[in-house]
Length: 414
Image (cartoon, rainbow, N blue to C red; front, top):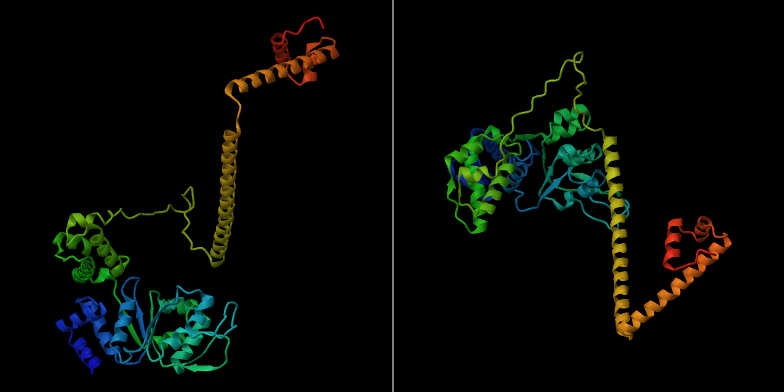
């Protein structure tokens, strides 16, 4: 009964509709394009038909998937959201359908997949265009019969799950490229909801700003007082490549950092970078250009693999370097500690007075001078007074030998 009342509200597209969508599901928009989307949601929600939601990144695909579930007879059962693009290809099948113990390396226990967890509820497959072909085959089987097998098992499992899929890709182009199954596309496309980019319905920006600002102010204990007309005009003229998500992040950041309850043009300009003029590339004709202009090509898969492998090896090398530096640092700390202990020992056990130390130094100097004198005299005798040969025997320069002879008063008549 509750669901029926909500659907009636949606079909009437009146003030109560917008209040319900805004408060319960976070759907905001009164423009013609958004009303078309809302009408389609109202028709699809009470059915069990698969739904395909397409649109650019940031247009709110998950919000509308959650709205469809919330207005359906499955609303009391789980709503499981899965980002197919964020899960590695080797793990996606296991995550969706579960696995048996030992099905692959690291599978230490039996586990349920998302489809079993979502039984009687709804599963939202975001970025469905990223799903590998092998997994698409198993998904098609679930759509047709509700049956699947866990990874590493032959036993059939059966579930009752509604599937809502979403993507920002053109699936018909992906079909032509061989990246997406045509039969799966037809099954998912029972109800197709296209979410318009924000630049195509700028008249909804004011309502969106108020919605995001009121939520943010409520968390901060503030009261939102609105936005100025000139600030709103700036927002309505922006391209919004990140769509509603970009607008949401801007408003939340602005209010949180500025603690602003009123959005003025001056405050807004601090958070919106100045636009640069568009880059105009006009290559010269091939027969006149000194350097050929070549369009940028996306790196091939094998090139990306080489890059990733190099990055992983670099990370491994950096980890080893950090380990070595930590070891070296510990050894330096130990040496410094030993030096400190040695200094303490020397200070504690040094019983000689300064005069005694000075006397010892003088005696040592005298002994050293005597040894040098004897060595020079011996070398001079062996070289028959030839100072160059004597210097070579001593391993010193001839100039140093001359200086030592004068300092030690060595006779020239050797």
